[in-house]
Image (cartoon, rainbow, N blue to C red; front, side, top):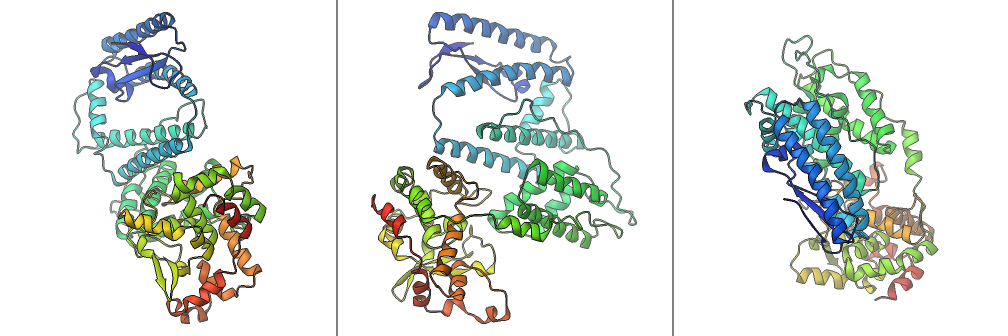
Length: 525
């Protein structure tokens, strides 16, 4: 039955249609649809509601009478037209909903990201539990005989539905980021039938998805890297097809590289990382005998030019003192101290401790220590959810006196009293670690302050700190120890960093001065 009413905090009456239970499989399992009536006048709303209800009832009658006889293309065309109309009305409703806060937008993206990771994991591992019910309902709604859940036809259907969910989640993420396409993603066709025999062996060659699953199981990664790596493997398979691994060609490798550079517009360093991971996977598969004796590495020679990567990596800018005062002294940033303390203190850790944002985001209370009356943070990968960029990143950094004066240790005591283990329990680990939401918020905050240079990001604080340390005359070897860089010579292996006096590191770090920024921050302390 249709109804119309005024939801809370909305500026229009809405019409709601409940979809009959037996027709919901045609509408991706949706149980109801809302449509803005674009008026607060009840008489006008009643007339528009009746018109919309009549259209909906006619659609339901058509599906009940003809749904079992209609082929897949006819059903999809009918539902597509109806849903496109509903999507337009939903967008009208979104336009009338008022201002979306940054916190709300962050929450939406986090939910979509988690759902996408679940779907990617299911597709990569061939685990159909999250999609079996929908697949069964789709078969039933189409009037087809039940399929054996262990059979190839049911498996293909489940994989197709999982790919469709990927498309849907990408589309939703784009729309919440303000990116709209005129058309929905085109469904990926089933891959053609391939011969599974490995050349020269007569043995069966496993398909890519199975090889990747075995590779991931036998080559474990840091916990925070598992889901992103799985997700990228899934994107690779989507580009080249889930074919037997011995059929991978250099053309497949080039097509994937082109998708990274042109379609997704990734940085050269990121492209290099993804191709490197595939190269390692291929060599492992070759050692397992999956590609035969004549298998040619399809990724050989595809790595981006190293000089081009280095040039691209140098484009990040350092902040000027004036820019730091602008953003750190802004009402938006100062308000985070009470409203979202994880944002406030994580940014200041990056500023005064010259650490990477993820090194700060993954800290636990056990990493806040003291030695020789000098409080310091321990940057390590010993915790279950901790990881480091490289072995040289493991270090101890004294807590800067300005950070202490601003009340950082008081914040630590507050977290201890709440019995949390992590320094920033408000942050949850996502595909890009704990600190990615803070990095995105910091970018938006800078834009509000008029700092729109794309080369200025949260990581620029690290560039700023390293530059200031050298400018202040801090010995180069001490700078390396503080920021976790490796010098790369034999002498490095003889330095036991844990045995160095904390006073040496403290004297070096205290040369880092942000006096004007501290004055701006102290206004709210």
